[in-house]
Image (cartoon, rainbow, N blue to C red; front, side, top):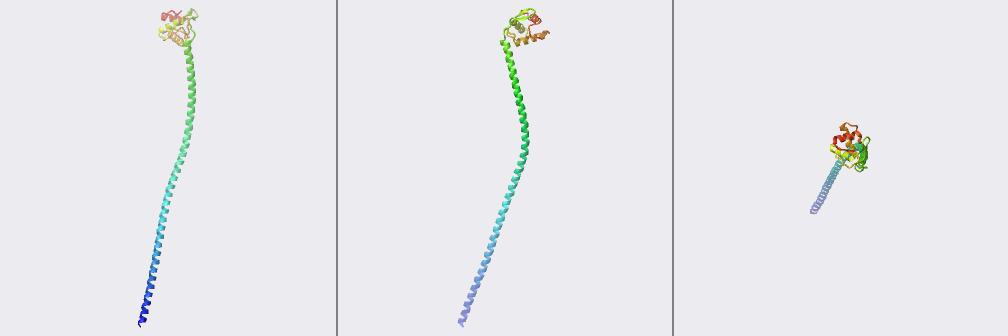
Length: 201
């Protein structure tokens, strides 16, 4: 009787142990499954967040590239306008350079003429014996003295019939109402002697 009771007790303990082990195994599998599902969900959420961040970056890059494209198109239009303005300015510069070349040439010619006039006035041949058609030789140095005395100078009494002396004679002739020639005509000589009181013949 005692032996049978002991066997039953042993069998019950074994059965209880097996059932306990099975229960623990079941709860373990459930916990692993739940943990695996939670890890997978977290991974998916993390991947979704990362993709959303990448999309935001792509959108920002797209906006930047679009803005640069629009600016480039506007710059291209401005460049065409600038090229047209540049061509106009280049044409104006070319015209100015041509005008400057012409002015430079004109200045050179004027200087050459002035140099010739000064050389004629300062270094021309002596004409102390200039001839008045009616009254014979005229002293050019005396003419220069008379003109200077009358305020048509100052002239250097060097006896040279240069451009300054001729201009002074013309001014005197104009003032006296005589035909303007710039030469020592008889009427000019007589009027000059009478006005200055200097004998020039």
